[in-house]
Image 1: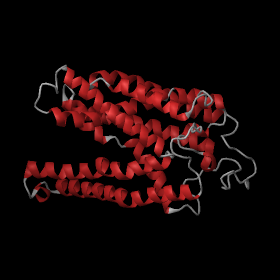
Image 2: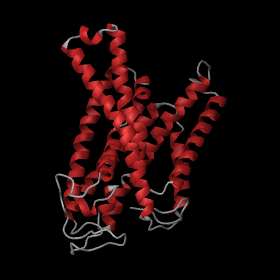
Image 3: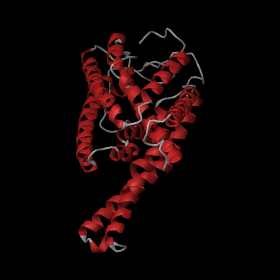
Length: 332
């Protein structure tokens, strides 16, 4: 956005401070207003990315020679190549790594209990969940497909803004995504901090009242959370593989295993130990579906973690990553 006018670490410090300040509200009532603005800016950003990908002459890194070899030693050239199935030679590591990146986008179930707890009518949550899920599947699928068609397998990047060849288009589209990036960090920091805060002050007046001890503790917990996030962001010099690793380690449980086990425990609590046979076809279908969900989670946790680590090792072997706490430009 600024053509790297400052050291990358300085930018990171500024964003950490901004995010900490935005995280200070202790209820989702305030954050919901930020969420509304975030959703609007996200829609504008991805819409612009799709439009710009379609109207520009060529994607970033384009070379008309199909045998062109880039600086990293990869054969990248020719017109954008669009495939319905993975290209010949695609390894298990790269294929599953890509799938883990996609799953990370759609899995946010760790925040669900916190949302439900602060709703005036928790029974309305399924309606909101259906609306959000349908909207995000449609928007992300359409935008992802459109950008991919115009950038192809050779030039597609993560995040997709990096695929835009026109720097002005890239900056305009990405600028609308900045509020969303801040809000997502704020949301997860808030959810993580309240787990700690509620555990410490459970049963005390500091939990639900405006006290000096409560606010100072809340601010300190958030500060510790953001400092850890800053260190992780600076120490780990890769983006795509980090998403895959987080997806395999955490989304495997919070996105799959937890909910499959929760369903079975809830049905057992409602209908007793023989709930599968007692509910007939519904019980058998529900048990089979949630067992399948649990197995998917276990696959993500085992094979997914292996793939993520293997991809990181390959990246270092090819010198594809930068260094920790570097001032180098890591912009899209």
